[in-house]
Image (cartoon, rainbow, N blue to C red; front, top):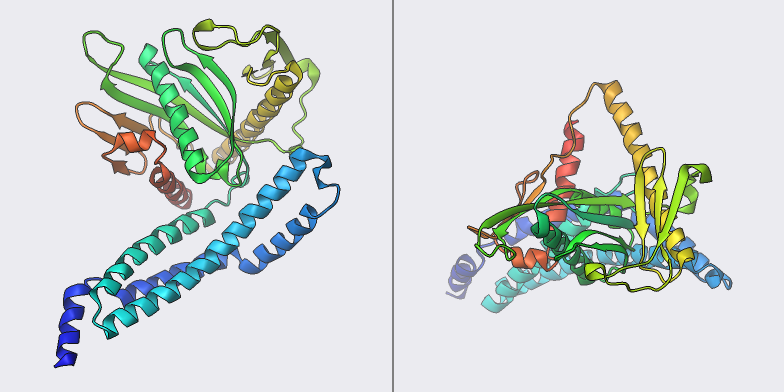
Amino acid sequence: MAGVRHRVAWTVVATTDFPAEIRELRTTLESIQAVSDPTALKAKIADLSEQASAPNLWDDPDAAQKVTSALSAAQSELDRVAKLGGRIDDLETLVELGVEMDDEDSLAEAEVELTGIRKDLGELEVRTLLNGEYDQRDAVVTIRSGAGGVDAADFAEMLLRMYLRWAERHGYPTTVLDTSYAEEAGLKSATFEVKTPYAFGHLSVEAGTHRLVRISPFDNQGRRQTSFAAVEVIPLIEQTDSVEIPESEIKVDVFRSSGPGGQSVNTTDSAVRMTHIPTGIVVSMQNEKSQIQNRAAALRVLQSRLLLVRKAEEDAKKKELAGDIKASWGDQMRSYVLQPYQMVKDLRTEHEVGNPSAVFDGDIDDFIEAGIRWRRSQSIEA
């Protein structure tokens, strides 16, 4: 009779085919291990640990920060793979005990843990897709308001907060390099760094035109307004990239930093506007206190942009030789609709959610993951 009750309880409680699900989890983990190569990762950690223990490491703070960040990221990746293997083993044990003891609570707990493992495996699987030339780099993100007047400027500020909140959720350090405020509200543009390995790989799929539809808070007639903002994402330049810019190709202007509404926040000419004459690329920096610091930051971002331009030219030439002239991105890649309904939808991946508030609060991991997978599928098709 006990055996009959056992089978009935399993039928009622275990709506999930746990054995099949666990086999699938193990298969996914094995494919991730094959790509991430734990042996090579351990060797990398050993090398970085040796560098981190050097007595003169902090003589160069920037280089030291890169070493310690890379070590932390590599160790974290190795730990996550190892822990997931242990979690799958524990899940299998929990399911076996739940079935054997006819314990509904254990099986319910197993359902929750299964969902969590699936999510964490998905994140690790996405990391294995970030194998582009610059994917491991820190990222420099620039947001610019587009068509839509004051609503577009406000939208640009909303996007800035969204990305900063996303970084904060993950514990990624950020530095706002430049902010140009609009007259009435919001931002004309803003530039910031995200300093963590693979920041560029993740955020590069956010590049493109974003659209906001809502009842404008700046329209006294309460009309619906559509506004646009552009997001640019570039990899942070490294010393080994050797992007040399002759001084004759650079025009440097200095001016006083300003805050919202034109309010002066600096009494000296510390802000720097750097123009690359051949390409017309302009970079402004005003968030550091000294002109020297702003000049160095501007040059670093200018080099990063030129590096991306150079790569884009190389890619365009390859596509021309291959006869592929299909654009990779559309003019509008994501819509944020607040009126007449609530929805955020990525027009490339078709991924959508019905909670714009959560998205604007930095909950964009699912959009980023879908974008990375979409980009991979486009690459395979090409």
